[in-house]
Image (tube, rainbow, N blue to C red; front, top):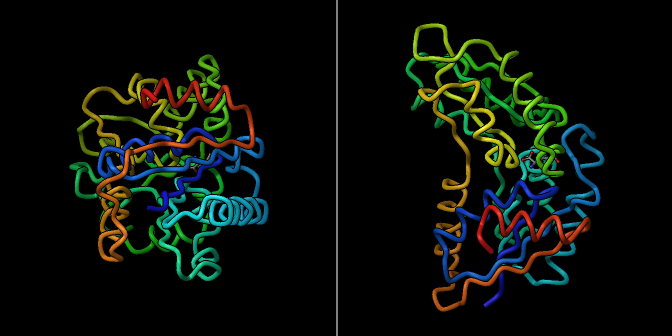
Length: 256
Ligand code: DGL
């Protein structure tokens, strides 16, 4: 059976791969980190669309993937529509900040949304926000540099940036007017969760998108009759950047 392709600008998509492997243990995966061209978040749509096009093309041509998960909010926001048009026969799953699930979890109805500048400025998030803004107050915080710091495993920088952006978001807690739910709108950010939690406090819920993306991928494969139930669950790691960094991150976060 053909593998599933998973792609991110770097190590962030490993947070999605983790959920995919848990739900689809017999599937084989090819994970491509475009780390030689990261970060995407502050680079603008043209750049992100071009990189997504190159990477998707590579996964389709060289690895013959049966499905592709764009495990990057920035690339999904900029390029998923275009990719759907260019690869109509391919099962394509994107990720987007979990605004809707956050409403269901929030009591104060004040929700913080962390993401890259590209994601939070995108037309896709604007449409989503417009459809939900009468149900909750969303406070958007573009976190320039944070994905890059996580990518480089730079603890000092991660600590400083988390402090800066969490302070700028406002007050956290369960009282009226306080943010009680935080959407991690970039797939790198789950790997900085404990740094964010220092500022959010223990009562604030954080939402990432791995599990819903894995469920959706499972559903689409099942519908298409493409589920692999007999594979070995192998993971092939590819990067346009440093192989050591990707292998170290996969080992640290996924135990592979
Ligand atoms: N992990 C990516 C996302 O979910 C972006 C990181 C970057 O800026 O390259 O948006």
